[in-house]
Length: 210
Image (cartoon, rainbow, N blue to C red):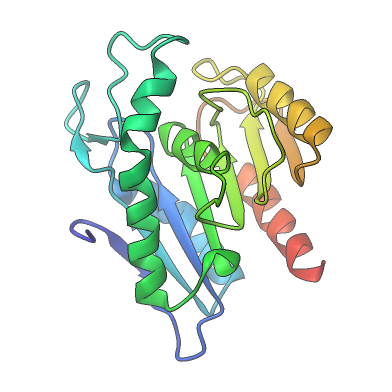
């Protein structure tokens, strides 16, 4: 399960959290290490891990959760649903490693990793209490409140995942009663930009004071 995962920060004896980072399609766990290092500084007693997607990408030499070849609004949900059990198993594996439960788990996803993390919040029992999505989206618009806290971070010049997707998701989640935040920044494209990471850390610190 943990083959090719990158442990950015080992948990201490008194582990107070688990942070799992999920990269974009066609990329590798190393692409999320800079984000993970920033989060590790903010959460010094958490186990922080950059997790590999399980399958070889069919668009590059990297990895993927599901193929984006021929992907459409109609067929994306089925592709996500097919791998969601494996995604949840992956989260549970690392929860066992850290000896924590859902409440102490934060999922951080970029792009396709964000899709998987966001879609997990639609489950009857989400695998994590907190989800941070950089340039992600829902495959299916949420139709009921989630028990998870959701933080959406998006560049306003994102040409891959338009920022309007994040705005629409935030509005819908708020209407449903889900705990949600939205941060968008100008001049940023499709990336987990350091300025967006700063905003994510601020949101997580706000969560910790609630």
